[in-house]
Image (cartoon, rainbow, N blue to C red; front, side, top):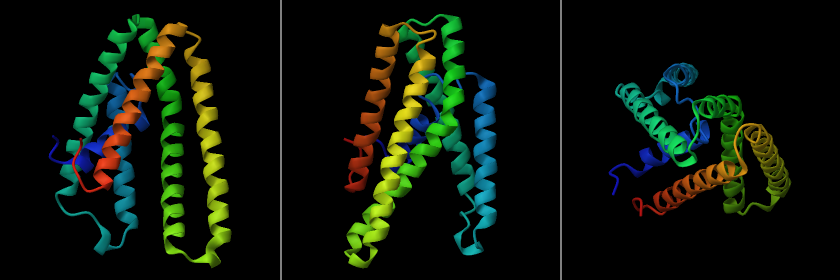
Length: 196
């Protein structure tokens, strides 16, 4: 049982959002990602009023999270390479494909999450005067889901250039299993319990 289920959920979500396999398995890619995350966190902190700025130890927690994320990425990269029996060339190309699609995938995931939160809020409020906003959010949700599917199709087309159909099927299965685990963890965390 994990002691910090929300931290684990965030870590798993970041892992899934930034990698669909062996993305950023190379050290330089992980370092660039860590630097980008730190820059983004600093920009966000500067945009907040003082009352909303993170506590002094928050930066250390973010660094710990990034180190744990690096370890998870490396572990996932090894598992994907081993289970799919990838050659060095295939591994390199898979890293390139994941790098190419990771930013869009993360942005789509964040947008979909924001829309779902806004929808829950609009529905929970029971305010019928907001039905126009709710309809707009539903349209946005459908559009972002289409965008996610288009992105997945583009990624699969890119993967088909160097992975066999069996390797792609196994890869899709591995990523789906990871998504289910993250979803299960998220559900148990929302219910107030720890991971099951």
